[in-house]
Image (cartoon, rainbow over all chains, first blue to last red; front, side, top):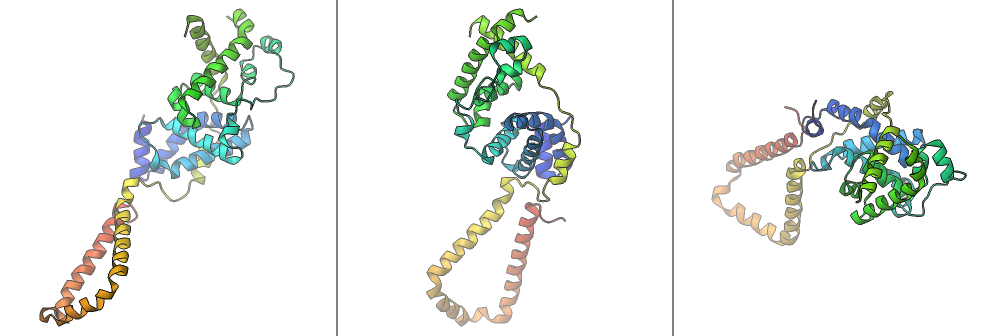
Length: 177
Length: 116
């Protein structure tokens, strides 16, 4: 199977659109999942955002730096597009931008064994950084690049988010297999 | 990071990965490919010749603006030279024109805009 780098070179130097299609197929799921998080679950808006991300990726492919991961570059484009849609990045990643979760107490989280619900108790910045780190496996440096944040801020969001989750999920974790 | 924190992080990562599911393509990729613009991405270094040409044109224009009072005198001087009679200039002009066309064609080919 061709590597990302080989496919990108084929698009750039041989104008091979089929090579780009392979990249889209390879990353459609992860980019769409990321877009859904950025669109807060609205799958139609998320697919539009993901499509725009891949189009922007194609037209700006020449500016992709080979030392970065292609997936992190796509994530960055999607995030920038989502931010440019409305709010400024500072507002987007504000500590205060906690989702409205009326009625979901810690007890309910324990009862439902729902990690997603616990995650929803965190601020937007904490959710995004923790998911990028633990779910997608990006390094802190890559997350800083994707979200356009200083490295120290990323580490702070992740640590605070994990502490919060540890508190929320402690009872459930003790009983979990 | 102590052992408890490390265990929690490991457990959390497992839980998050378990919750995230692979999304089926369902025609998404085909939609993206259909929406891609016709213009293809171009590597930055392929633009270098055009940037050089543009820089040369700007420089020539600036020099022309600065030196334009001298141009009639230079032409007049050139015409007084016996060796620069018109018939003898024709091969030189044709060669210059040919070189210019070849240079532009070469740049177009370099830029991928001309198929041979």
